[in-house]
Image (cartoon, rainbow, N blue to C red):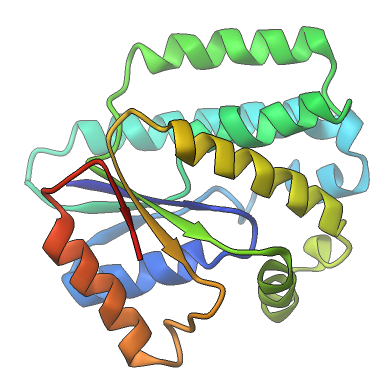
Length: 210
């Protein structure tokens, strides 16, 4: 199976992916953060580096999806963030806020639409829903220098797009988990509520909430 975790910056995607992988024996495909040459410059000058960064992420995610598609040994892959977010959340937000010009955005969308014809959606998408205080707190804890000055308004605009994206998502099954009052690292019962829901609903319905 291909399971993907989506959510805003600081929502806990990587941590949950790692915990689920350890719990079930799955393999994690991480977001291309480490070694990404555009990420730190992007947070310094978004207008200059937005197109470069989004193309880098899009290519990285496409490579991951193709690799997942080619798996022949029946293993389950859990992916940290999806290719859909690249276009519908991050590139869209950069365009709407004037940090990516129309020419670059149209070029990006054309490439994304071409890629969409070559891939299949995940078997299950898990959206970690988190409000701004939760996101800011999580970001500060992980202590990435280039993230420490992220504008909360930037996170808020991303959250608005996530809400619209998940409301319209039609590519496959979607599980929505509100993590605002959760601590699935420190509280075993919170993590168990997530695994119980996944196990009970993995083959049922199209949109699930806990």
